[in-house]
Length: 329
Image (cartoon, rainbow, N blue to C red; front, side):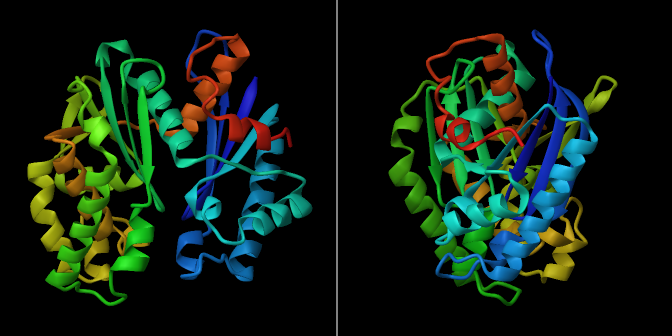
C-alpha cells in the first residue's frame, strides 16, 4: 500500500509518502512541504485569521494533488497544536473540508507523544532498551518513556518554541537577561509540576530527541559522530547547550540565522527552543541526547502498518481521535 501522511504543523504543511509492506519498515517515496506559518499568524486570542486559513487551504489542496499524482492509496491528514489549540479550530477544519473534500483530524498532545515514541522505537530497535523521548514542537513539548513499542507514560505541555516566543519573549532582539530568566522560570515550573511520575520511572538506557528544534540545536551546539558509512548521528549534551542560551539571547534574528544549523525561518524561535531544551534536560536529569531522524509522521506510518498487519498492543488504541476523524481522500 502507498500511504501519504499529511502533517499540518505550526510552520509548514508537510506531506510524506511511503510504500508499506508487511514485515518491512516504510519505504520513502517522496516528501513535499509548503510554509504556512500558522503559529506566527495566530493572534493572542488563539484565532487563526482569514489570510492564514486561505494559505492553509491552498497548501492542503496542493498536497492532495501531489498525493494523487503519486498514486497514494491512503491519505492520513492530521493537524498538530497550531490548529488543535486554535479558538476557531472547527471552522478551520470545516473550511478545509469544504474546499478540498478532505476531513483533517487532530491528535491530542499525548497521542502525538505516543506515535513519536513509536517512530523512535522503530528507528532504534529493541537494543535501545528503555527510552526517554523529548520532542519540542511549535506549540507543545512532548515527553514519553517506556520499554515497549509504545510508551508506558506520555505527557504533553504547552511549551512549544513558537508559542513561548510569541507569549513570553519581546518582539525585539537582543533579548534582555530578565526576560530569559523569566521564561526559564516559567518552563521549569511547568516541568516540575507535570513530570513527577516520569522522573520516578527507572532510568532510561537511551535518551532521544526528535523535532526540527532539537536537530538545529544539535547542529549548532552538538557533536556529530561518524556513522560507519551512514549519515552522521548527531547528539546534544546539556553542557554543550547551556552557554548557547545566553549567546542566542544577545543576537538579533539576522545574526542567529547566520549560525550553523539555524535556519532563517526559525531564527526567532531558536532562543525559546534552547531554553526549553536545556530546562527539560536538567529537570529530567539527561546529560546527552541522541537525535532521531524519525518522528511523528513516521510514527503514523508505522502505526498504520501495524494495524494493516493485524498487530495488537495495549497502546494500539491511543490514536483513536486520529482514526475517527480521518478518512480516505
